[in-house]
Structure formats: structure tokens, C-alpha cells
Image (cartoon, rainbow, N blue to C red):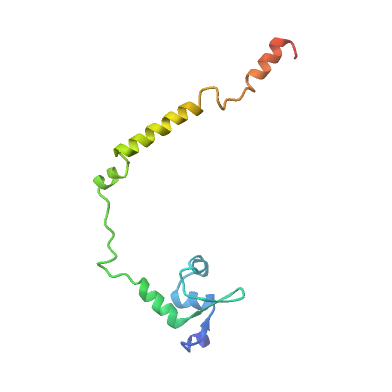
Length: 122
């Protein structure tokens, strides 16, 4: 790897990139769509300059990296209590009641043996 990293114009394989970024190869394969790379047949190659600029774009400043925590009020607004949501929920419940009546979907296998016993088939 030291030989490959000596020149910024050379191409690296996935192992070289893994050593450079200190990231597991498996993780790099999972992120491959996001990482700038070249394909030569089934082989994947990387350039140091492109990886460095890609990493710079991934940089998060301390102020930018703070994630706003959601308040209880925010969580309650996600529950869908608007009049339209209530209407949709009501329509879905009504259609379920029409389609799924108590007899629908139940197996008659339980009744089968009793009928056979009562009819004298068994």
C-alpha cells in the first residue's frame, strides 16, 4: 500500500482505501454508491484526490452537527389528528368492517369433523 499511496495520481484498491480511511472494507462496500470510484470490470478503484475532496464534503462543523431534539409537542403533531386524517381513518375502518365480517376468513375445518360425526360419515 505504501507504494500506491506515494503518488496522488495512482489508483487505489478497496484495501488501500480501507487502510487510508481506517474503515472496514465491508463498510466501504456498503457505502460504495456514495464514494467516488472507478470500475474496471468487477474491480473498483479510487483516487486519493477525489477521496480527500469527498471527505471534505462530509466534514461537519461543531455548530452544524448539532441535531435539534424533538419536543413532545412535535411528536404529538405527528400523530395525524387533523380532520382529514380522521376522515381517512374513519373511511378505512368502515371499509374494513364491510369486507372483513366475522365469518370472512375463518376456516371451516373446525366445523368439518363435527359435521362428519353428526352425519355418520366417520
